[in-house]
Length: 409
Image 1: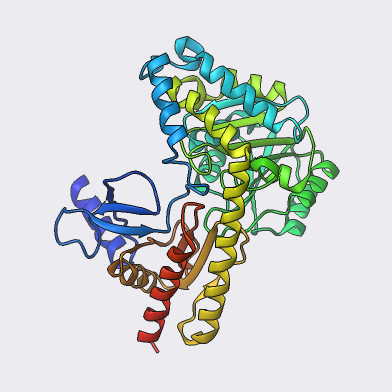
Image 2 (image 1 turned 30 degrees about the horizontal axis):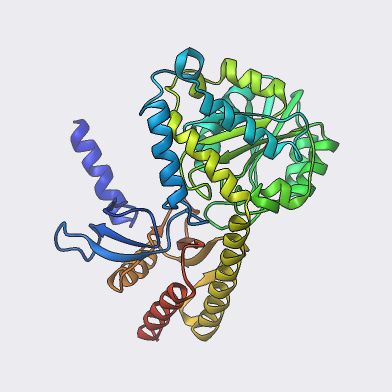
């Protein structure tokens, strides 16, 4: 009965153009990779692909210094941690990483302390379930990441969602809030559109209504702000009301996440956050390598990589805007973003899949993003840029899209 039920559900998903497909990379994370599988692969043999779908924004995932650092960390600390942080898994490397992250966040969050997690998903679950008790109301932007949505669903707090970026609607909800604790929850850079939350206005609302701001800076950390310190540094804001989650598997090039906040909040998370308490600590070698990553991000080399990334964003947006203007009949739309996430919105699921497949035939890897990841009717190609891309790579993508657009004229 269960197998029949699930088979029927899978068939229905496929009929709606919602079936997902996993592919296998054979070489290191980089714009040029060898990849197995996909709509045009007749067998399991890998083929060369130019990818625009990784979150390795600064191109650090294959950086020689990080490779050497993780090898050094493994030699020093071994391969695994052996237990949770609260038992015996918290190493000197973890401690050094948390201290350095706290220093990074101190200009934006007074007295900041940091707590590391194995993934950003686990960190967001921890935040919302540990802080969202029965005395709280969570106010969540409707386009927040799935991990924030899931954390809110698991919390004991009341949950209200406000239309994306609609701060007037959010203020009306805050004015009517009956609970003593108020938690405003938002991405800083939205993962599927690349647009940014209005952090100064959100802080003003939080101060006016005695609320706390839980910020997911997964796509801002390392990319935005002086020395890549993220969205709060970029906005020049400072408040103890900020509770910030940042990931270490995107611009930082490795894996993991952290929460930075007032020391009392960090102590509470350490005691009560189930996805921190009841899980094995990440390998110390990883924490050791992340120290090198943070130094690279803050260095002159990191600044150069961010400058290259900004040039790539400008090049791609200019090319796409011209292409869309020349072919309005296609109905393509470019999202409003000044970040490495560029959404080419197609609309229909099948059309988004067809566009992704057509690019795949030309050796370009950009999966179609469809509901429920994005709202119905906004299926898209989520194009992500890296400092490791070249200007020629971007021209290759634009040329392929022009070719496809001409074929549909």
